[in-house]
Length: 266
Ligand SMILES: O=C(O)C(=O)C[C@]1(C(=O)O)C=C[C@@H](O)C=C1
Image 1 (tube, helix red, strand yellow):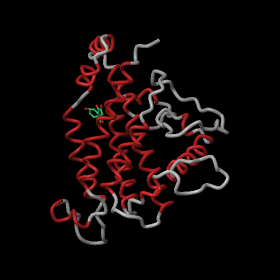
Image 2 (cartoon, rainbow, N blue to C red):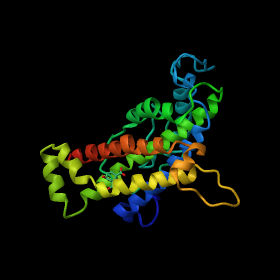
Image 3 (tube, helix red, strand yellow):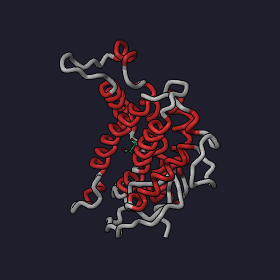
C-alpha cells in the first residue's frame, strides 16, 4: 500500500486493505517457491558453525547474522520508518536519510510478533517446504529465508491496519469499546473474524500455489487438477495452505486483538 499517496485517508478502507493482503499472497508464494529449490541446510540455523571475521563477538546462526546485517542497511535507508515494516533484529542504526511524513493512521504501539514468525517459520515451514539435507547453498538459502520472513512479517503486521479499519466502523465501534473495556480478547476475536473471507482466501491460495508452482510452457494449458499435477510442482501446495491456516491467519488475528486491546489507552 502506498502510505504516502495523496489519498492516504482511503488507506483505511477494509476493501483496499484486503486487496493488499491478496497481493501479498503472491509475494509470499513466490518467496516460498524460491526457498523450496534449495535443501533445508540446517547448518544456517545453528549457532557456532561459521566464523564472522570482524564480528568476533557474534555467536548466533548464519541466518541471524545475515538478517541482522541486512536490516542494518535497510534501517539506514529508513525502511523501518514505514508503518508496515517491522525488523527482526536490533538495535539498528539511525536512518541516513531525513524522515518521511507518513500519515498517522495507527494508534502508536510497539506490537512486534516477529519472534513468533521466526519460530513457526523455522520449526514448521522449513522442514516441510524443503528437501532434507545440505546442498551447500547456504547464502542462497538465507537470502530466500530473509525474503520469506520479511513478506510474512509485513502481511501479519497488516493486522494493525485491518483492526483500525474495523474499529472505525461506526456500527461496530460500541461493541469493540465494550469488549476492550472488559478486556475480553475472545469476544474481540469473534467480532473481527469473518469466516467467509478466510474460506475464500484458502481456496484462492490453493489455486494460486497450484498455478504459480507449474512450469508454464509456450503451448499447452494450465492444469488445475491437483491430483495429476502435484508431483511435478515447484512447491507443495498443502504446505502453503497450511501455512496460512495454522499460522498466518491466526497470528494476523492475534495482532488485531492486541492492537485493539491497546486502542483506548492514553
Ligand atoms: O480480512 C479481514 O477481515 C481480516 O481480518 C484478515 C483475516 C486474514 O488474516 O486474512 C483475518 C481475520 C478474518 O477472519 C479474515 C481474514
